[in-house]
Amino acid sequence: MRMIFKTSYDADINLFRDREQGFWYMTLLVLSLILPFLLDTFWLGEITNVLIWAIAGMGLMILVGQTGQASLGHAAFLAVGCYANVLLQDPVGLPFILSFPLAGLIAGLAGMLIALPMTRLHGVYLAIGTLAIAILTEDLIVIAEPLTSGVMGLVAPTINIFGLEFDRYGTPGRFYWLVLAIAILMVLAYRNILRTPLGRSFAAIRDSEVSARAMGVNVAWTKAISFGISSTITGLAGALMGHFAGIFNNETFNIIISIQLLLMIVIGGLGSIHGAFFGAIIVALMPQTIAILRDTAGSVFGGGSVAIPGLESAIFGAILILFILFEPMGIYGRWVKIRTYFQLFPFYRRDMFRRQKSYLKTERMR
Image (tube, rainbow, N blue to C red):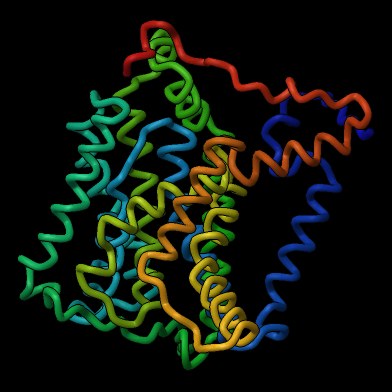
């Protein structure tokens, strides 16, 4: 069993817990960099899709996992980021290196404006309010047809940065490295937010708004900031989704995407960066896994593969139910338990991870 002795308060806010953890993350980074040389174009595209979903998951994780504010409307900010990025490039003429961050800022500003009247909502009421935003956004895209082309959709231009082109199909390796670089920057930004007083204010609001207010936290303003940061990261993911899809319209960012995004971080593990990546792996690779298993079963048992309508949603729902019943902490929570078991063996006890009621009696009905 390995023990970590902390000799200063800085040990609690370091990027890595110890040198061994830093070594493994660096190894993972090196492996990620050489993936284009190890995988074919198809699987490289799937891994790129995982990274884009992970960025979107990190955006929602800041709001739901860190601040405790449920949202079913983040597909709206995916759409805002996607349309803003493309419109800033094509009609306006800005390069991607400027349109991309501006699209995130536009999505973040939209998130803060929406959050201001919703800061007093809690629980299911907040979820319903954000759900209405997602539905309205889908309709607004159709109404603003002169700008968004309505149901016909827009075509994302090829990314050009300092003369280098980044395209999913033309240059999949370059596009993967671009998305990987953005994902790494988002991870570092997320991790550094958690180490700041603002990040601790998010956690205080999540655990108890009454206690956070008693400690001097401006709950309404902090919620709005959390919503803005979450929307900014989600908008950046939406911009990348537009370039990944190539062409998109109002149906690309429907309400199902919002629900899928929320369920993704629940399955991955709320409140952790790892949970966003684990959930993204499930969401992005599940359709291909189902297709491969269906084709394999058809070849083994004879007959062609039969497409069953709604099979993907049914399997995703079954996975969610199983995790809620048997592992509410998600995939990352299960990994933490397995790791702790081997670290503390034979002193591990199941009650170490018993869920505690961290809310106050006055907040149980919120």
